Image (cartoon, rainbow over all chains, first blue to last red; front, side, top):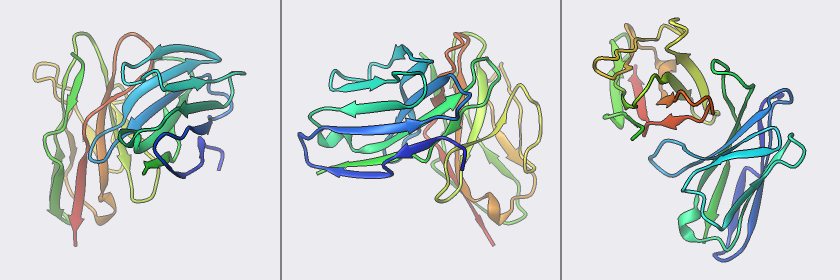
Length: 114
Length: 110
């Protein structure tokens, strides 16, 4: 499968712990997006990168959240001091730059905070 | 405010019946509209976009700027169409970020 891959697929953590998720985009895609999806809702934008630069962050992204894309390839999303409200599916997507290019999604990481 | 509204959480139809999944949007500008689909245990994938004006798997969607709608239609539903459908828009800022609706589950009964 040469699509967007995310790791891990599932993560259960205790409240207060830190977690880190990884996203590997399609190799020629310079744009990478993170979304969060809670039960019964559509995905909500969190942040995006163009190459290694983080160009926009949603107000949903509290100080406990940080995302990086150090070499413009894979990206990590870290949540510090997790809370029960962080339980959600975290989706990564990538696309080539341009208005008409298609975004391809990964299968997501499902986080459960207990 | 930028918003996408899908008023139906669930749409249940019989095989062969017409389908219309509703989508309304709010955006001050010229957005691009998309329909994404998620089949059971699969990832979210693009179904169609308004600029392509194409029919995919028998589905079509017409952008109505006057009514700010982008409803998804298919004349004869098939069981394999059962899935979650999301309407989404991206704005004119060229960031490419998507704003999604809440989604509609389409259930096609035999």
